[in-house]
Image 1 (cartoon, one colour):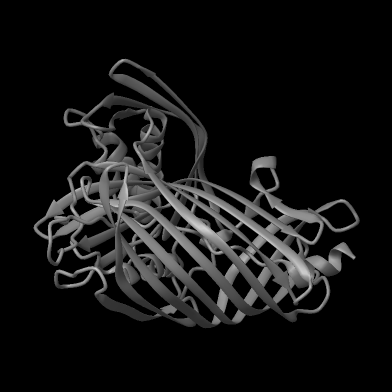
Image 2 (cartoon, one colour; image 1 turned 60 degrees about the horizontal axis):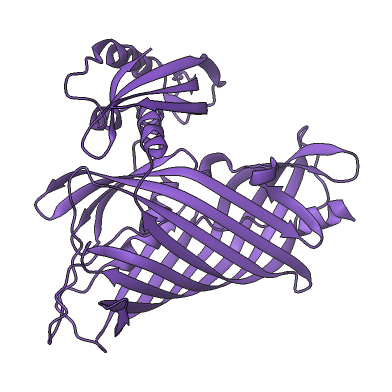
Length: 424
């Protein structure tokens, strides 16, 4: 019975990504012009809490919970454009199907999301003051499918109106894009809904009615270790989504003093038709792939706050690993102390970039310690990669372990963040 439920019932929750736009407006009488204000070297943490419940095949209950912590660094501001690095620091995922908990990362029941795992990944965007994304760079240093998905679904639908608006005014945003092998569209009808009085402050509230649809979407494989009756086994899940519709009512409360969103509350309705196939670690299929329907409802909320010292130290660590994966040192240099000499580290990485066609770097067991204006981050750094092949086409060479050792980052306190002084 458990195997049957798993093969017909497992559907991954969509990743919630923090919205990072702001507004600057006068609450005097008359129209208001909303624009985001970007400050160089500003760091902000956003916590996203998502709770959804529904059914699979119209009868099997499903619960999905997701908590995501992201850190955003405004790396540079040039005229109307701001370059921001958004790091996913942590993610808690909980999935229950029927009476079986299939994923609970807090209890050690993790899910290997493969290419779509956002944990530890940085997405860089170049955005104008209206929230329009001019460029997006993902983990691989180019406009990869995951970065494009995040950009389209959580940034471009948030473009602010060109003109000043008054309460009751409306505007629309829409986008059509490719996502992995499928197509997707996003349309949002916005209105300046009201101005609320909150603790003596006037807060503009913007409301959007969004419809996001995808068709013929091949999701990258995921893997899970679960008990299907014969003890724990690692299973691979391959999923093809023939149609997915996500309807959302988005309510944004603007913090006019800080020129950013103070709170986001999203009511969601997800309906999908998907076909899934499950395989053992040896490649043996468990049951035949079947088409199933999924329906879920829920709420997503975001809260912004200042980062902790430990989170700022984690950002430096992720700047290193993402620089390796992108084969680009820009992220590492963005957190470098002014007097630091990292030439030997950069030379070593540059040689690595030339030798391997693709790289993956992960940091585990991160330990942060601070004393005054100095700090250290100790971690286990692992680097794997593929060597280029002589024939044309994508690399199919084996993944090689390049490095697996303890590393120590020495940091010094900068303006609002920790800066990298050395790597040992």
